[in-house]
Every structure is written in structure tokens, then in C-alpha cells.
Amino acid sequence: MGAFEFTDASVKMPDTSEEFIEKLLLKLRSGEDVLKIPSREKGDMISKGMHFHLEPEMFIQISGYTDFTFPSGHFKLMPGEICLVPPKVGHSEKAFPCSGFPFYNLVVMMRGANTFMHIANSAKNRPHTLKGGSYETAVNTSRLIRYMEDVCDLSDARDGTAQSELTASILQAILYLLLDIIRNKEKIDEGGRASMCRTIVAGSIGDPTMNVRKIAGILKCSPDYLSHRFHVETGMKLTEYINQQRTEMAKGLLESSLLNIKEIAWACGYTDPGYLTRVFRRTQGVSPRAYRKKIS
Image (cartoon, rainbow, N blue to C red; front, top):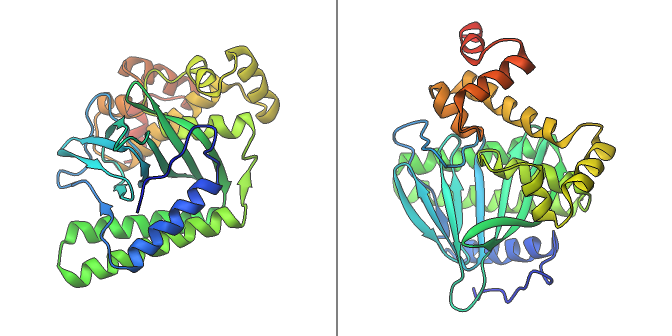
């Protein structure tokens, strides 16, 4: 598969992602191995500065390459390859051009009833959301999570040819499901500011530098204008939405992981665990430790 000669202006969402997913399906049907999955032998793993999600996350490399770092190792994702990060495995990425082509990848994330897809470009070797869309499709989002988790489980098993064939079949099903979501246009305001904000927040929840000013820079507008548009479209302040999403992630980690409070703060984009505690107490009425004790 040759690299796509895209420029930022020529990338279209969802057209570009649909075209590339179809090419990946051709590779899979011909028997090519395109999948890379990081190890999760040590269970819930995170280091400071890494992204961390409660659901699986998929990266599809369009051109250039991604240099991934995980708590247990690293690898490069080359054009035409897929990285599937299991739930609760920390990761960080650096973006590089390759063979004269710039960096672009397609990122797929799930949260609640929504599937988020965005194409990223890069600045100073850091991936940045370029164009994206959010799709409200509770049934298909649940299927995506289940299928991706199945692929991760099969990767852990490492039981030979039969497992590899089953993995390839489920991976094809995931790609067909993504095409179905795109083509049925089960989306929430794909081109709106609020939709792009949701997509950026979903992908950057663990980034402590994510704030209104940074998101406005990505969307090439002023922070005041972005805050106003988000409030008009959603009835909520963007700063409130960011803290809401971080708090919901903290609740999920308190309920389902053995990470300590400091690690949970890192995962949610807070460098100071004390700040997480203050935000959590203000929105939930109890401290993170008290919340974990209450549900245990």
C-alpha cells in the first residue's frame, strides 16, 4: 500500500478515513498482518505523561509513522498498520514523516454512547487533531468495544495459527463496523465546534496542558469565541465539560482499577493529585478515596 499524498487542505473527514479503511480491508483479505498490540502483562499500567483510557483505542497509520512508548516497551507504527491499545494501558506518541510523506493517522475512541474518529497531523513531532467527527451510536459503539477487547484478549493468549485467523476475522469485522458507522452518518454535528471540542477532549483527557486556549489554538479561533460557541451549542462551559470528563474517567478508574490516587490523577490529566481531590469533592461530594471505599 503506497502512502497517501495528503496535505492538510486535502484531508477530508470522513472521506479520507473511509478510503483508507477500505484499503486496509484489502490487505487483511490478502492475508497481510497489519496489527500491533502492546503487552499488558502487568495489568493496569501508566507512567506520568502518558495517555490512559478505560476503553480500547485504535490507531490507523495513513502516512508518516508513530513512535509509541508504553510502560512495557515501544514500537513504530508504519503506514498501513493498525495499533490497538488495550484498555488501561498507558501510552505516549511521537509523530514523524516517512519516505517524504507527512504524518497523518486515524484515531478511533469510544466513550459512553459515542464513537469518536479523528485524523491527526503533527506539530513539533506531536500528534494534533486535524479533522474529526463524533458518532452517537450506542449499539455499534458497544460492539466496537467488545470486538476490540476480544482482539486484545486473543493477543494475550498467543495460541498459534487458529488464534491469528480469528484475530484477523474480528479485525475485519471492526473495520466493516467503522465503515457502517461512517456511511449511516450516525453523527453529532460533525463540522460543529462543540463536536470537535468533544473529539479533542476525548483524545487528550490525560494531557495536563489541555485547556480552552490549547483547544482554540488547534481549531484556529480565539478562546473567548470557542467558549461562547461551545456554551451556545451545549449549554455548558467548555472548562466545565473538560472537568466533567476528567471526573467521569476518575470515577471509572476508582471503580475498575487498582491504580493509586496519584496514578489516577496522571491518567485524568492532573499533575497535582490534590487538585483532582478538590475537583472530585466539589462535583461528587466526597473525596476519591471515600468514593472508592463506598463502592468497594
